[in-house]
Length: 190
Image (cartoon, rainbow, N blue to C red; front, side, top):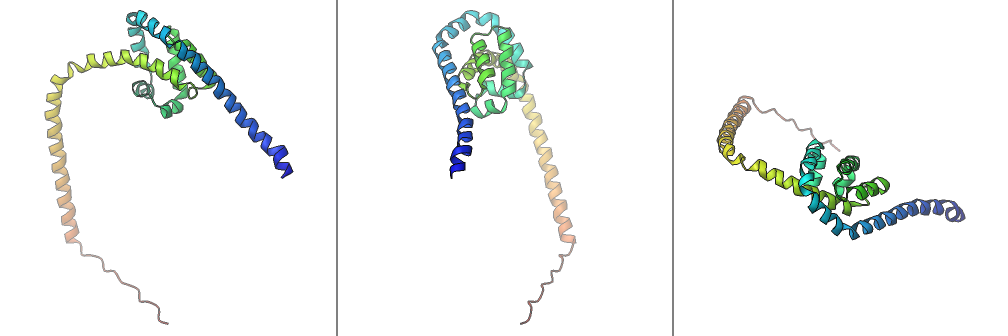
């Protein structure tokens, strides 16, 4: 028991202390960011028109995972895509997106998982531009959807007919083949 207390336990504590120190520092960075949210929101509203084309360009150039994460921010996605999240934040820093610089610095220093609140705040601001863009794209779409709907129903009918034909062929082949005789082994005699 002495070896356990003197050698093993201190090493385990040391590992967890590093992690808790990192969490505490990340919590402090998050708290500082939360205090400056109002200023960031005001700056965002002032620069909104000049930022919109730049943000949309960065968003379009980003990966599908980042696009999904911006639209639907989730903690698990943030952990899985930490490197691409950091790259996205760095791109926002280049265009001087409000609040992106302190978030990017905290994310690179502590990891995106520890500063998820500020990252999601920035993603929320980015998503305001994305929602506007998607609505503009969806407006002309209803005219083409009626044509696509009729062709898709025709395709579904063709596919269903093919499946029915395959089922009929499969049933016919089952009927022509005699069932294999299964010989049961006799139980051993005592």
